Image (cartoon, rainbow, N blue to C red; front, side):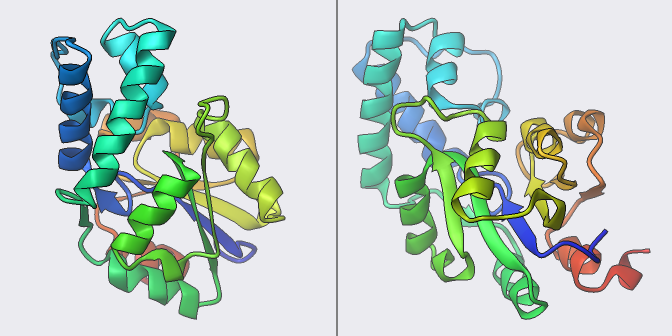
Amino acid sequence: MTKDIQNVLFDLDGTLVDSSRTIGMSIDFALDAMAVENSIDKPIEAVIGRPLLDIFRNEFNMTDAQAYRAIDIYRDYYDSLNQEGTNVYESIREVLPALQNAGYRLFVATVKPTSIADKVLTDLDLRSCFDGISGSSLDSKRRDKSSIIAHALRTFGLDPLQSMMIGDRDQDILGARDHGMPAIGVTYGFGSREELSAAEPAHLVDHSEQIIDLLVNPSAAK
């Protein structure tokens, strides 16, 4: 699997960082400001990875106008937290340099807007590991994972046959497949093993260190 791969695209939330507390606080703040009750009967992790516009419209029954207002409130509050409540997953700080040293070019493909993802990575001292970031557009027109991956391929001139995706939700796996790319699903994030298995990734890993085994030391992964 690794012979022809030169570029590795990582999801952000649930793959590189556990941002559930930060995202949960920001959603709660936006709902309070909009006087909307948080009545969803699922943990916040179940919706992380979906575009904010879809979360506010579908989970909280907001109109488009209300949802866009809630997004503005969410983003202002999220920014003010300065990554409070967000933690880099164990071993990620070792995994990324190991991949770089092995010759891979690393990118981020995330539903977060590019500018916000850039700030998160910078604040957490991860930005230098990545050659580029492809996020959603601030107007939410580019927000599904397939279009975000397409934007990364186009913007950074990446050959999909030489690229792969790593993520924690089925949309990461399916979005990669839309472009003929293999994908690794990580079970330590927000998506369940069942969700990821159903999307049929090339591999599933339970710990980030296993990414090194697959991409740098493939004989160790067998």
